Length: 498
Image (cartoon, rainbow, N blue to C red; front, side, top):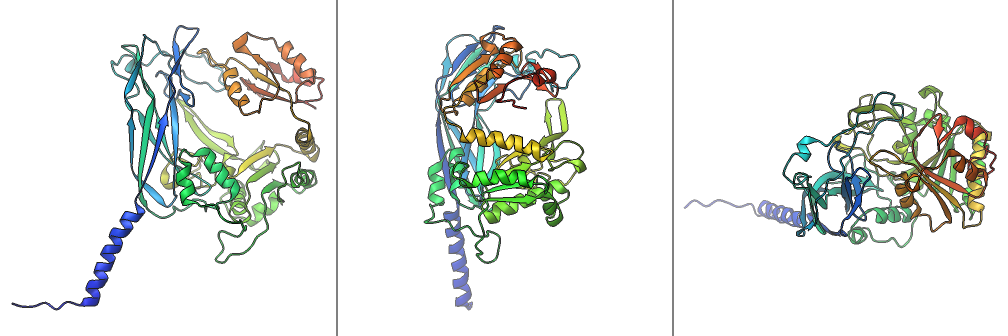
């Protein structure tokens, strides 16, 4: 028998790599599991005889015109950015039926405030309301991944309530279990580095549904030394937690604000002010707006920046703006707008918001690898839309006066009727009020009875309120049931101080 000679080193090497491959596959494949519990649905009777189904900790889905309005919840599950999803399994508990017969309200077409034509009253979609089956057809929809502070968040839309419009019956699920399986892929390009700073950790833990998984893979550092995250070496850099971008002419006004931000009363931040002219001449980008975003990314990666204030207006033509703004595109039903001004572009730093490189920004395929764009902000972005130093100081003085005031403050909550469903602005304002630490309040809500403009006018002029929260319709000539000429006649010294 002929014998074949074996090269021992090669055989051992092959065996080593085989074992390494098996070991790596085992170690780098992970499961992430989260269980969701839902409260019993509540039925709300509407004035038109239809009903709405509501569940705590969900939102009402109204995206499909003519389809039933039903509660949904978006599950947000952390997985490391270096891992990719290989499968998502969603299981539910047993379905329960709500006793009774129901005609659930359908979603209607939204119209832009500028729309001047006839409004068509939408009817229930016959393809949905004429089908003797439960809607929607699935209990969940996979929405892909978003990224926040260098970490990946997988989104899954859960539908705890299903409706059969022919039988007029409702069933619901009290429990969902979501299991995500992953494998190693390496960190995608255009995803921010995970800084693991205290503010980032706090922000992530407030968003994700599986904090234990995050904490187990991101142990708390013993101390934080702010260093460059991009440099080849570890180079200590000065901290710039709060960054202001403005013009040379308005820098003195915004220096007054940053001095306040450095104080204990203003938050005790490390601050930095930069001239927009220097940014647009030094940083790369297809236009000044992208150059500004590249500057903010630099501040985030290398200086620990968490807050950005844009000090200047964005009206007028792109070349005539004090501080640039990104105009993005969106389509709602049959309406498309390609020039929606948005500062989210400066806060959501993953990807480019223009993956396909055309003239439209923020399209559905403009995110990482041609997916949805990043909607989670690494930095908090605000803007004082002033054209002059005096205008800037007026707003800055209000901010400082409010922060230096003595709590509790008083707030006036104003909510209008938003459509004929009806949708009440007061319902949404009440949700906002849950986060206002029991601040003393007064309500002026259409849902409690219509109110004349004079009532609001007198309350503003009373100077009894430090702030006003409003949800209703308006345009450049009209808001809060007041026209521009009405606002000019106000005599108050708070809220709308002129």
